Each structure stands twice: as structure tokens, then as C-alpha cells.
Amino acid sequence: MRSSAMLKSATVLLAFAASSARAADEPVTLEYWVYSDFAQGDALALQQTFISEFKEKHPNVTINISGRGDDDLTAGQIAGAASGTLPDVFMNGLAVGAQLVEVGALSNLYPLWMEMPEEYRAQFDADALKSCMPKPEELYCLPYTGFGEIMFRNLTVLEEAGIDTSQPPKTWDEWYGQMQAVQKAGKYAVPDQTQVFNSVASTYAIVGGIDGWGIDFAAMKTKIDPETYAKVLQLFVDMAPLNSGTSRNDQSTKDLFITNQLAFHVVGPWVNPTYEQAAKESGLKYDFVLVPGMKEGEHGGIKSYEIVGVAPGDHQKIAFEFAAYITEKNQMARWAKLLSRYNANAEAMADPDVAALPLIEKSVQAVKYAVDVMPPYFEGAYPNCYRSIVTDNAAMVADGDASPEEGAKELVEELNDCLAN
Image 1: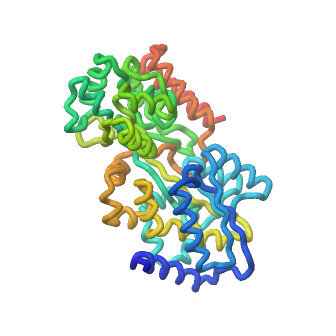
Image 2: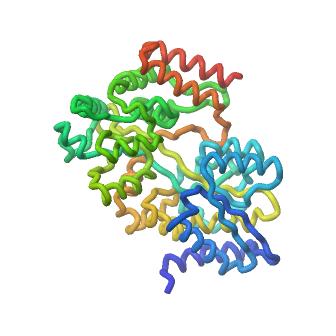
Image 3: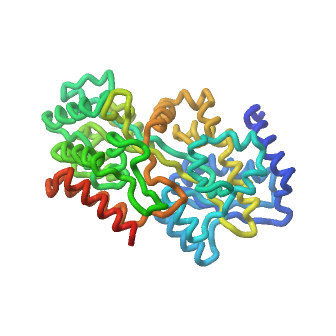
């Protein structure tokens, strides 16, 4: 028997279908592109359940699900926009949203959104929804899964370094002291935070405010303040002799963590299944906490969302209805329980069974403090030169080729040149 939550979900979306007369009268096939890890195992089985449930209301609709890696999703959507072969419904990240709008891959969903019942529209996290709306009456996505960055701690490494693991570090200074103790014990403290744009952004969040990261697209200038950023660069200098030489995204970083050679890994919750499995198979002792900030009560880390987009075209209306179904509270609560992953449906996150999951509880806390990866969204695409300048500059200062003050001044000049050109 279906739960009351499922019946409520069906009522909301059936009301929408009835009022808008969107059910397909003729056979329709929708192509549905998802992240590769959403198209395998238990995640695929649940996606197929969602598709089957949708087909109960729309028996003439066939939905083909296809998994793709991050880069393949973007490349395929850009190519599809040029050739007229876009998937009807697809996932991607907020950070590439502006690029997809520029090439014509994303429909403005605002008219269809406003036809939805208020009960549905009120479900989403307000900030997440705002990220999809660069202007009034423009909505280019439905916010989907997301993350607030957290810090995974290898408890064995910390204990061997003489660190009390009963409480997480409250400030950067306390955390840095623990990093030094780990290094003295012959282990690595952290990955190299200069190698990936997201890890540079994460480190910025320890020092800088939410409004000081990103681009002012009206002026085509970076928002980074040199004085603030010099303090960020000093953190890279401090961590340089303590890091593993691997990036946050490398498999070797996870291997070092699992084999008790690395103390801290600041990253999104997607690595938890790997560490959870290692805990079962090899006895890995770990936990996850908020990234400490410069002062007690402040926190670092980044946040972002994956999105569901709908392509322009003849199938736009029924495609939007399917997108609305998979992002509705009941589906997102089931998705969260399966993956222990935070998502943008605030009502799903408030579900008692979901909110009690430790990884989601910590993610909900992290999102409150974290900095957006590449804000503002949908106002303009970040040029590739912007990201490479940021990482190259951080590495240069960490290597001692410039002082933090010199590096910060040079960074702002180079970023503004990048944007001007």
C-alpha cells in the first residue's frame, strides 16, 4: 500500500497534470541523461522506479535513462544544442548552467513552473531555487541534489599523533596545530589544496566572506579583495610542507586516507560510500565534521547543487512534468535515504527519517556556512582562464615564488585581464 506521503505527492502532480492537460496523447519518447553513478546499482533501480511511477500516469510516454560522466554530460549537451539532438531532460551542475543557456540547451521553465501548485513550488530550498533564477520570470533549472563540503577525519592517524579526537578542531589555528602534529608523526595532514579550483575556493571560505568570491558580471571584474586573499594564500604556504602532493579528487588521496597515511580530506559527501566500505572491510576509523574557520563558530568549505534541466522543443511540457516529478518531496526523500545525500528539496530534508541520517544532518549544517563554488549562477559563464589563473597563482605562492601579498595583487590583475578579454 502506498504511504500517505506518496498519495500526497500524486495528488499534487495529478492536479498539475489535470489543470495543464499535459499528458501525452500520442506516443512520446523522452531521453533522460543522468550522472553515471545515478545509472548503476541501487541508484539506477530507484530511478527506474520513478520512471515506472510516472508512466502509470502517462502510459504513452517512454523514458530512456542514460548515464554519463560530468564532462560527457556537458559536452553532449553543448553538442546536442548545436545539432538539435538534445536529451529532453538532463542533469548537470549549477556551475555550467550559464554556458548551457548561452548555447540554447536549457528552456526557461518559469511559465511552466508558475502553473505548478503552490504546494509544490514551496518545497524547495529558497537559496537553491534562487540560484536557478538570474532574473525575474527566468527559471532555467530545478535544483536537485547538492552538497555542503565537510571534513573527513582519519581517527587512527590523529590518535597516533597524540590528538584528542573526541571534539573536532574549532578554529583554523587549532586545525593547523593538528596538521603539524600529524606531520611530526610521519603522516600527511591534507591533500594539496592548490591543485583544484574547488579546493582553492574551499580554502578561501575559511578566511573570506560569502560575498567576496566570484565575478561581478556587470563590471566584468573579480570580486576577490587582494588584502583578504593574501590571508588565504598564507594558508597555502602554511600547508605546503604538510600536504600529500595529491589533489582532493585523486584516487591516490582516498587510498592514502584508507591506509592510514592521511589525516584530513576536505571534500563533498560523495566519498563517504568509499570510506564506509573501507570501514567494513579493513577497519578504517573515520568521521566527518564541519570545516573550521578562522574563529570559533565560523566554518569554511564550499557548496553547490546539481540541477535538472529541460531542453527546448516539442516535448518540453511533458519533459518538465517528469522533471517536476523526480524533484518532488517524496522522490527526493527516497533518494536521500538511499544515498544519504543532501538535496534541494527542503521538505524532503525535514522528513524525520531523512534528517536523522548523520551525513545529511552534517551536510545541512555545512550548507549554512559554505561559499558557492562559482557564483553568481546563470549570469555568465566562467572562462577557463579564470580557473587556471586561480590554481596557478595558489601553487606559485605555496611554492615560495611570490609572497602572499604579491600573489594576491597579481591574481586580481590577471583575473580582471582574463575577464576583460
